[in-house]
Image 1: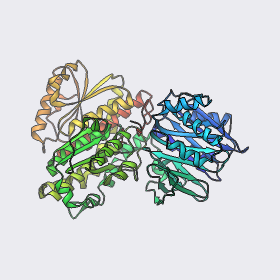
Image 2: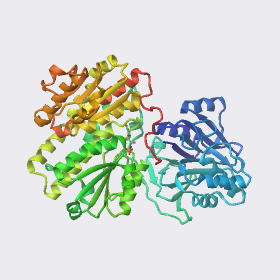
Image 3: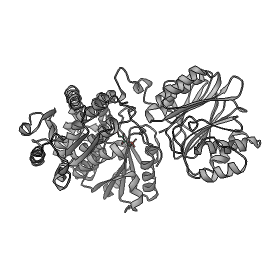
Image 4: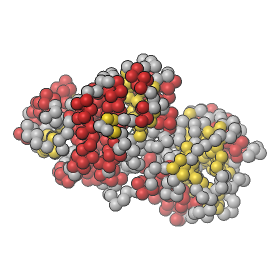
Amino acid sequence: MCGIVGYAGPNDTVEALLNGLRRLEYRGYDSAGVAVIDDTGGVSVRKKSGKLVNLEDLLKASPLEAAGTGIGHTRWATHGGPTDVNAHPHLGDDGRLAVIHNGIVENFAELRDEVTSRGAELLSETDTEVVAVLLGLETASGKDLETAFREVVQRLHGTFTLLAMHQSEPGKIVAARHHSPLVVGLGEGENFLGFDVAAFVSSTRRAVVVNEDNIAIITPDSVRITDFTGAEVDFEEYEVEWDAGAADKGGWSSFMAKEINEQPEAIANTIRGRIVDGHVEIPELTALGEDRLKEIDRIIIVACGTASYAGMVGSYAIEQWARIPVEVQLSHEFRYRDPVLTDRTMVISVSQSGETMDTLMAVKYAIERGVTTVSVCNTQSATIPRESDAAVYTHAGPEVAVASTKAFVAQITALYLLGLHLGRVRGTLSAEDEAAAVEQFETLPEKMAEAVATHEQIAQLAHWMADTRSVLFLGRHVGYPAALEGALKLKEIAYIHAEGFAAGELKHGPIALIDHGQPVFVLVPSPRTSPLMHSKVVSNIQEIRARGARVIAIVEKGDTAVLPFADDVVRIPLTDALFDPILQVVPLQWFALELSTAKGLDVDQPRNLAKSVTVE
Ligand code: F6R
């Protein structure tokens, strides 16, 4: 949802901006643009609706001669449709300054009335142009860029990462953040700004996170950070863990295919260093203090989409091992229900990006009410983990495809580790349960590799089912959220109607949907470790089969009970029932990918979606 890049340095500015925007493409967008200080000393802009390739074509037809400073943007439309005119950058001060923006300026109508009453004409429907024009009115009145910028950002309500440059101060870019991220990349004789480190990681891995309500001022040779009043702020640089190659497709047909294949490694990375002498130990939780962990009497997991399904899976395990009641709430619903929170509540947020605005707002709400906040996150130094009391990173590596895959399994893994840590500290976890779980973790990456190898079988299945218009997914217990996730994947990238149900719920209504040939994926629990649930799910399969469903059963190897009732059987390795969804979801990911490919769709960047949703 919007990509933001700034470059100040001696190298090819347009290429630096395009390179950054390409690496931010995963965020989702519907128009793109760049502005540079050109070789005549003026500001020049090129912008175009649609994908980055349209902007690249425009730049070929009408090249920019840049003099070393520029800003670039990919826009996900909020105020005004995805047109050339609405694309960023927007200009102010008679074209002498350019602005790009992520977020929403909530008081834009009031500001628009002000600038139009001061004689300004607006070309677009965007809130950003209003800001550019307002800033231009201030610089035109004789203020320098920094002073004018500070005054303007203090007047904005809403959320923003905002970058601006002015031709009277070539070589300088100013950037502010308020509830939206901003990172500086430190190079040799060049500096970068980005929405996240992907914007510059191919040039430098030295980064500085700009804190909330701060302004960064960069030139090729200097970086300063101030607060909104102009007071200088100290900052620390850090080394980015992800290398540039990790964010390339690396020969795969899509990022999603690459990321599904990376799942064994992602899980291994989440587990690494967290099992010591047969015990699960998460140092970030240890740092919270044993007493604090022992006092927790309720956990609320807040998350959106796929991350909320990971939270649902995790809730079963945490409750089982730590004996604490756990509920899962969608982040955007959480604060509106006036939740009962005490100083013994723990709010665990789950977020791949660590920037999802709905989840960030839920976490802030929890912090204001004095509860303990723990962030399960994949992105180093993102806003949510930085705001939380403890951050448990999943270390799954960059996830670029909009549809989450490896982050999902890594989130479940991290939540399970967290549940085991809590159970041990609180004395609720038996030695046998701990040993059994640790054994599962030790073999999980290997088993995941086997689950990934179901690809060929699923590709054939998808080939036969290419015309499918609706698919149902059934699961019980931890299989239920995995079924929801299977349905979400199919909706997101193959645009096929799909629903996930708790298998037991079917006869309370949804079974009416079953008609001749209706495809239904059923996630069958392990018969060895969960015989009761297994027999119930086999009964559910018989019920839908009797009504004409085409059953595709995902079963543990050696499970023959379903054979008489299933049209297709996909086998995954033996594991304990709690760990089933981590493996069962993989064929569902492949299925969505294959159907999307069969329909000729863009697997990595489905329509209307953004990788990280940074507006509420
Ligand atoms: C689905 C998907 C989304 C995200 C959701 C939360 O494939 O990726 O449903 O899971 O938008 O995003 P994060 O985890 O970044 O908070």
